[in-house]
Every structure is written in structure tokens, then in C-alpha cells.
Length: 239
Image (spheres, helix red, strand yellow):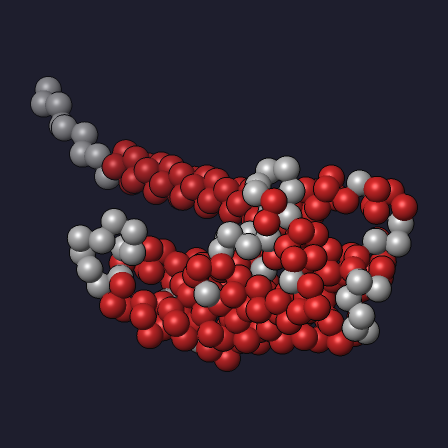
């Protein structure tokens, strides 16, 4: 793609894998979902392009099998990332002099999961970089494994299978074929829309909460003033 080096162009990357295209794609999806070093990989556009390649016959594997393999790799990647965060996290975040791995990040992440838990896991799948780090942070924050893996599986199906199927069917449209780079850029943009919506929603909730607190404080102050007025002692004037 125009915004990055050629080897990050999904078509160049997949074509470069040659006969091992599907195997390489599965490993890339695993790395992006579970290994911190995979944060820079273009997962969204790769999945969409994989769907295009299946439709064109470049990937000579049934669509359903491709979707199953990619979903499994996305899920297994999350499992690996979770336990990496759980095992290595305490050592990384226990160093007070660390400028990157701060304990306050763990505390904030825990609060984030407590508030947005299920939604955070599913939505993070569609956000580049976030989908890589949120997995390890879930392990660091010791989020309930059963809950995490359940919603991780749901997100994996929606993301890995969903984008691949989307690429398969849209790839048969002439406009998409002829404007692939614009389409891939649009996918990257759309991938951050859920987070933008959540941020706006969170700000509105915070604003509403602050307004409620302000109203409560005003009511308490009014009640206190009325109480002071009713209990005020008027001095007696001697005649």
C-alpha cells in the first residue's frame, strides 16, 4: 500500500509466499493476534485480500476451510498472547524505573476490562495494533480466562472469517478489483470506527456522570442552606 513499504502491501506479501501462501497467512494472523512483535502486520487488509485470492483461484482452497483455519489461528494467537502476558507481565510491570511497562497501565487496563470487558475484546479485533496488545494486557490484568476466551472466539469468527468472506464476495465486483488499494485503505479506516464510537460514547457517559454529580452537590448545598436558615437563632431585643 502507498502508506507503507511494499512488503506490507497485502498482495505483494501474499504473492511473495508463493505455494505456501495459506500457511504463511495463517502464521501471520497468529503472530498479529498473539505475539507482540506482530503489531505492525496488516491483518485486516490481508484477510480481505485472502478472500479476493480465493475468489480468483489464486488460493486453491475452499472458502469455508480458509475461514476455519484463519479463525482458529486468530483464536490460538489470542490464547498464546494471554498466557504470555500472564506469565511475563508481572516481571515486566514490576520495575518502577520502567518507562514503557508501568504498573499503572495494568491497573487502567483492568478498569477498562471491568467496564467494557466483552465489547473491548470483540471490538479490539478490528483495530490495528490494539488487537495485538490488548491480548497480552488481558493476561497481565488476569482477566477471567473463560470470559476472555469466549468473547475472543466470537471476535475471531467475526474478524477472520467475516473479512475473508467480505473479500471473497466483494472481490467479484469490478469496481473493487480495479480500485483495490482504495478499498484496502477504506477497510483500515472502517476498522477504527468502532473505537471512535466507543470513545464518543464514553465521553458522553462521563459528561452525564459529571452533570449528575454537579446536580447532587447543588441539591446538598441548597438543603444545607435551608437548614441553616431554619435553625438560625434571632437575638432578642430588650425594650
